[in-house]
Length: 142
Ligand SMILES: [Cu+2]
Image (cartoon, rainbow, N blue to C red):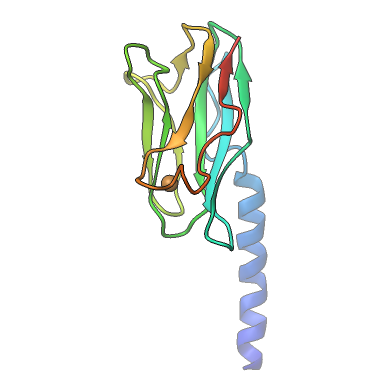
């Protein structure tokens, strides 16, 4: 047992250090002029679900990408900003358990916010938004 404790300690330190340094930069360096907005999806201990932060805001014309972090190790989520692309088209990305996804649009690592408005942000997996996986105050383009 003793050898195991000694072997495991440095390993844990590496894992925690890795988490810290990757937080906010899992998508890598953004292109100049692109704003990264980080969103977390996950399940609470009581089985309810969350999406944080409760709201986000950006300026019309801004170039934005969402860094979507799935805090659940094994639950699949589907991040969607409803109608953000106009004509009922969502900016939507699937996020596997434990994964971090960086949104793209038409091959570019960002989306240009053409329209002002308040957009609904949800997980499209059946039942998840009802469990709370929804950005309470939405995404506002002002
Ligand atoms: Cu979900």
